[in-house]
Length: 32
Length: 131
Image (cartoon, rainbow over all chains, first blue to last red):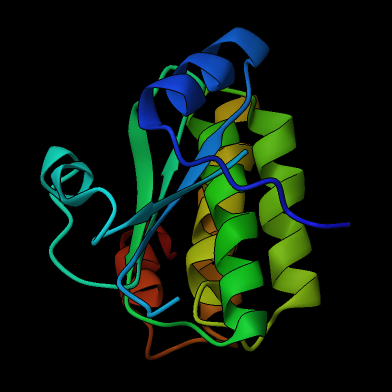
């Protein structure tokens, strides 16, 4: 199953709070 | 729930969370508070164990002691050679203590560290509970 990566910080924080789920943030500088 | 912040797409995100190095991974609780951070690459198995540790830590912070104990126990049993194994032995014992307030739970941590992970900082932290 593909991972559904979020890109919007505020939306992800709001979704985590609404759904009472933890949030994993991956900070990357890797080339695309 | 995974969120990716790429330095080229969102450099302000790095400043917001005080990220100094890549890769870095943060685990936030549902309220958006950072609870665990890893800086630097981890091989797949180590990363998986670290993620499990993060979830165990979240359970501990939420005072879900039984869940925390079970999660730390899973790491100790399934990833005994990982970099978070000794940490998990320590916090598994702490989770047990939080449920019982029986100091034998703390003594048991010290005893367990007499047999494994003796050189870890977590073994040294448990010395005060020995005897």
